[in-house]
Figure 1 (cartoon, rainbow, N blue to C red):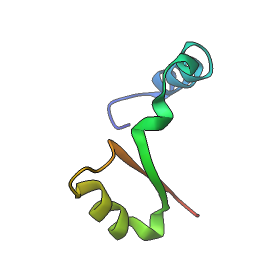
Figure 2: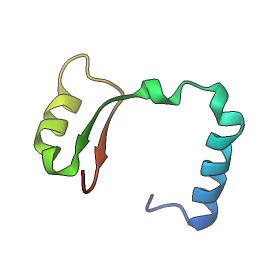
Figure 3: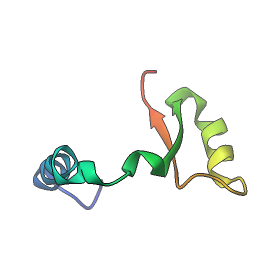
Figure 4: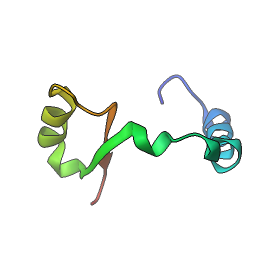
Length: 60
C-alpha cells in the first residue's frame, strides 16, 4: 500500500466489485488469522506448499 494513493485503492475496489468478480482472487488467500496470531501466520506462509497469501485481520 505504501506506493499507492487513495485513487488507486478506489480503482482497485471498483475493479473487484465489477469485472474482478470473474477472477478467483479468493483462492489466492489461504487461512485468515487474527493479527494477534501473526507468528502462526508467518510460520504458515513460509511452510512448504504454503498458499499464495495468508490473510491477517486486525481486531479479530
